[in-house]
Length: 271
Ligand SMILES: NC(=O)c1ccc[n+]([C@@H]2O[C@H](COP(=O)([O-])OP(=O)(O)OC[C@H]3O[C@@H](n4cnc5c(N)ncnc54)[C@H](OP(=O)(O)O)[C@@H]3O)[C@@H](O)[C@H]2O)c1
Image (tube, rainbow, N blue to C red; front, side, top):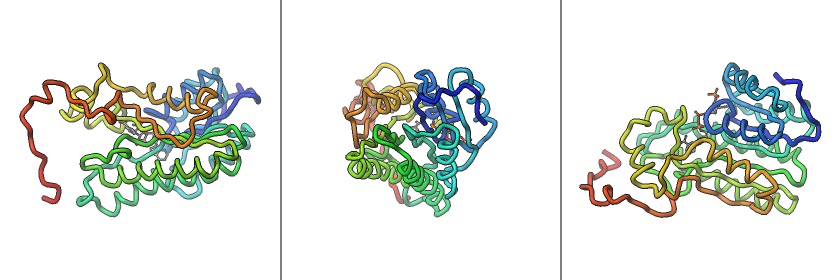
């Protein structure tokens, strides 16, 4: 679907996983700046709600499709070019949140995470690079657990680390053509993906006891960084992975209570 408010001079951003959480906040952020939006996610009703919220502010086209399906990236780029005639930024945000330690990862999970988060992202980049002009850019949503590794993270962490490599490779290959690639790496943020853990002690501990900042990160924090990277303000940033975690990954911070607390050993990995 598409609304009628289109301005042919406005830049265009294609966002995967745009109907909820970080992707939705990113769509809202770009819309506020007058960009036109192409939004991809699986559930049509959530996309329709996004389009309704944004309609009036800017042009929006939506595609209800799974990024893991081999044809989706091509379809999304074709839709972008048919409706808007240009692509200024690709935001690779859709990703699987499936999480298990390496020894307990079944093939079904391995395939799902690789298909959605790595192969899906790769195909979107490949298709986007075919139509992007100098000045365009790609921003991929990784994770701090892809920069540092994460307890029990298995394939989630491996794939997010792979996205750092893909970003650096694209920065090297296409920077000279004026196309930049960067990655944002959020810490843990309250979204549908993490809702099962909001009340878990480790969620609070990461966000409060291990983070030298006095509030939790939000989807808007991530959206602001993505927009900054895509805007003229970020036009000399290329190949970077920027952690958005209040300092969690760079400081090894522990609040005083946590530092003095009795140590509870982790269960041995292979048990
Ligand atoms: N939340 C965190 O703490 C956190 C931390 C670090 C990194 N991240 C990363 O941030 C990204 C967004 O996560 P989030 O927390 O915002 O998740 P979320 O609130 O669950 O939203 C996920 C969005 O992606 C769409 N989506 C999921 N799988 C898809 C698929 N196979 N094909 C197309 N669309 C798909 C969802 O819509 P449908 O379900 O309708 O498709 C929804 O729009 C992910 O890459 C995640 O790994 C999140």
